[in-house]
Image (spheres, rainbow, N blue to C red):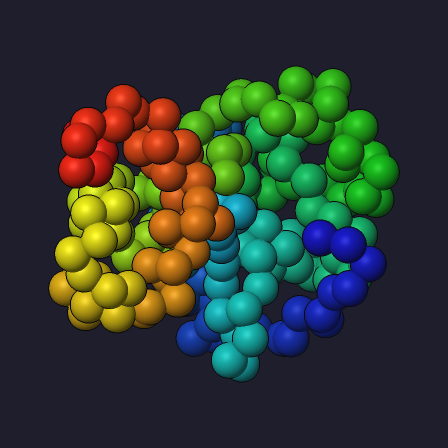
Length: 187
């Protein structure tokens, strides 16, 4: 999260009711999993006064009365969606990184919830994998312009450009381009 942080504002009674409605206790002593807004990195997201905050930071504040300030709110359960106060501790960026290495989460998956969601698994994705393959196939055929493809799929021309250059949906782009070429385009 770096050194930049925002002070969490006081929560009204309505804010508290909203906060408590956005997670589910999976089992006694287990994670309390956030089930609404999420960041692209897979953390819960809660909006207060038109500002977005990570749900784990808000949870720490709600349950302890202490704003985490410049410290990170770490998950001892390794579940980025967890807001259970028993699973949250404060630490520096260095401590959080060391814990991540100790748990084997530096580039590998401990729990599906701890993964950066890509492609269709990202709740903000506008396209499916199949649609991206179709976009790449159409573009390779040369039959439509970027704008025409964008209009056909209801997305921006810049997204189509980034897909066709491998800047978005890189895994699908690489898979598509590793396929054997047939006369007249890709298979």
